[in-house]
Amino acid sequence: MKKATQTIKTNLISTPTISVPASFTALHLAHISWNLFSANSPTHFANEFSIHESSDFAHYNIQDSMDIAQHFYDCAFAIGSSVEDNVDYSIQDAFNMLDDFYGDTCVREDVSTQIERAIQNFVDSKTGYDYAKHTDYIVQDYTALVEATQQALPSQIAQLEKQLATLKAKQTA
Image (cartoon, rainbow, N blue to C red):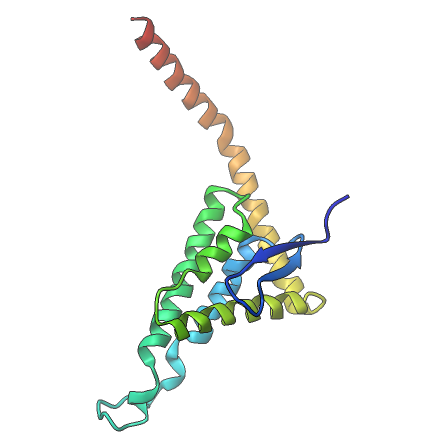
């Protein structure tokens, strides 16, 4: 009997684990990471720029927003790349990558909390249109990756067999 859920371990004291559907994948976390990048990019400060120290702009913590956004941007593509290399890339490894942010303690806690809330919101909306739409896209990505792997596998096997034959020939020589 298949489990209906799987568990992600977190570093949060308030939420040591997050329960997600069994169909939840690393690409779901890449999708969430991209959304967190978009949410943290400080584009909403248009027309606010000022170099004056007493301005409101100087107190917006733009650099923290930039660092967090960059982290989520990098993670979205790194998780995607990891899935391309291994379609069975674990959600725990993807989560650990997302949660591995270097910064002040309060900023790290903010990042961890954002990730936890984003996952919960995504999972809680699983009956909604967005969850189904994005899961359909993710399934299409996995299907394409599996098909590409299956097409490439025979030529990779032939190449490895050729290398093995070369190595055997060197060994006996």
